[in-house]
Every structure is written in structure tokens, then in C-alpha cells.
Length: 208
Image (cartoon, rainbow, N blue to C red):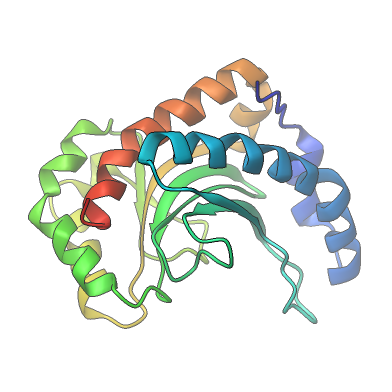
């Protein structure tokens, strides 16, 4: 069973100055948890979808100056990468934990994926109002579905379809102070509940 306990130290990593020092802390403090989550939920997605999923823990290898503002483990049915595919993520910003499924700008078929979502907007009715949507995976900002249902949701997905840099993320944000208070069991339950709710959306995205 997944026994991840988030701590204030995990979120404080993103306040460390300097690329080298922050990367050292990421590697020693957060990355072991991402590797553990990688094993647990790649097996979960493989079982749920019938496709073999692989975990991809962020390496931040291309950075030479600016330290990373967030980090994550991603899941996709491709061993060599995930960015060109719709994928799932568990990750941290300094302010919150996120559990999402995402289509980012590298995805070559995102126009088709977006149109499938536009054809099935009713899928989002099954998600509670505290779920979030975002159009930028490099920003910690998002809006709740409670705010987005009227027009913003459709606008974000239309932008995903029509704009080269358009992206779309949907899932949950958990404030750092709330994540720290969660028992490992509660975190596991919330994560699986979230992924269970996101899988029908993912299946529409991939045309399944």
C-alpha cells in the first residue's frame, strides 16, 4: 500500500535558493516519494485501462540557472516519454499538491483530443465543484469547476484545439497545509477517487 506522508519540508523545497541546492533537496526529499508513487499508480493505470503505463519522474535536466518551481511524477502508456500524450500527474508546487490529467502543447493530436472533449462536455458534470481546470501547466494558477462550468471550461478546451500553445489540465489542487494534515490512507483514498473520476475524461480524450 502507498504510505506517502507529505510534510512541510516537501513544500519548503521550493523556497530554497539556487538551482544546485534546490535540486539536491528535490532529489533527496521529494523524488523518493515520486518514485514510490510512480510504481503504485503505473500499476493502477495499467489495470484500469488495459494499456501498460509507465512512470516518469521529473528530472529538470535542462535547467542551468532557474531552479524548478514545481515537480511531479507523470504516467503515460509510453516508456520513453509522456509529453506528447495525454497523461496523469501527481506533483507539488510550493503552495499545493496537484492530481491531474493533462494535455500539453507538445501533443501532436491535441486538436482531435480537444474536439472529443467539446463533444462530451457533459462528462464534467460528474466532477464535483472543487475540481480545477487550467490552460497552462507551467502556472500554479487554476480555477474551480464551480467557476468554470458556465463558459470558461468550453473556452479553455476550444483554446486547446485552436491555439498552438493551448493546454488543458483537469483534476484537484490540495493546499499544502491540507496535504500535510492528510494521513497516508486519506491521501491514497483521495488520489484513487480523483483518478477514478478522471479516467472517463481520459478515455474520451484518447478516443476509447
